[in-house]
Amino acid sequence: MIHPSVIIDPSATIAANVKIGPYTVIGANVTIGSGTVIGSHVCINGTTTIGKNNRIYQFSSIGEDPQDKKYHGEPSFLEIGDNNEIREFTTIHRGTPEDNNLTSIGNNNLFMAYTHVAHDCVIKNDVILANAASLGGHVHLASNVILGGFSIVHQFCQLGDYCFSAMGSAITKDVPPFVMVGGRPTKPHGINSVGLERRGFTKATLLQIKRAYKILYKSGLKLSEATMQLKELAEKEPELQILVDFLAKSNRSILR
Image (cartoon, rainbow, N blue to C red; front, side, top):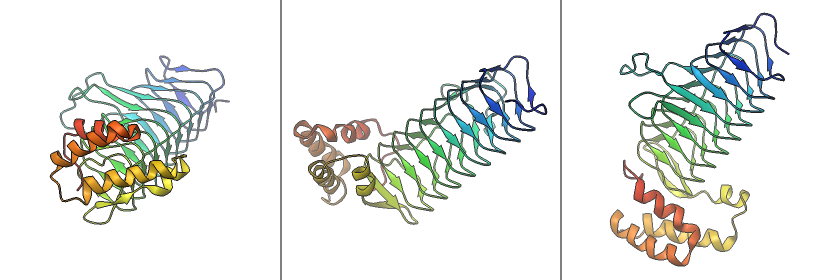
């Protein structure tokens, strides 16, 4: 199950039923959970923990040093959960002391070919990064986010649950939950209706989300005024609370 050409550091911990293809290198302090399949010519380095039943395709680089000039070899970490699919030439880097020394990836995510996850990113669950989508450092993606191919996200941006970016988007501010963005310059273009329907949102809930979107983007209100209205609306419509909570913690302001 492990090809004889594979190089594994003695300090690495590999579960009994992990499969590793030819010419892959597993560095020091790497831990790989059961059922994970790793292709050929993969490099996994640093203090990296990979959970169960992941699939990592050939030529990926996982857990390498951060691309940050402020990083000088301090201890840093990468944690990857379960059931993730990491396609060819994907790069995922560890954290830095500037944040929590940790890059964190949850479960059931798909990273298509040539995607990049920079240092200190936090990615929750059921996220899709289409081909060549790239995250700058310290980006946070909530669950069920989808980034179209060649989308790029500026450092420190946060993307809320169920948001969607069209191909080639350049995201420079936070994107609230449910919102669909696209174009250059990248702007909001309604709610992610198709994605929400696929996730089982009812028509009644979709109507309330559309109502919230109009308050936030179509009413002409200042952001603070729109946020106050959304707080009042969320008291009657609890499904909008994640939108209110997101706006409260947004540091870069939102695409608007």
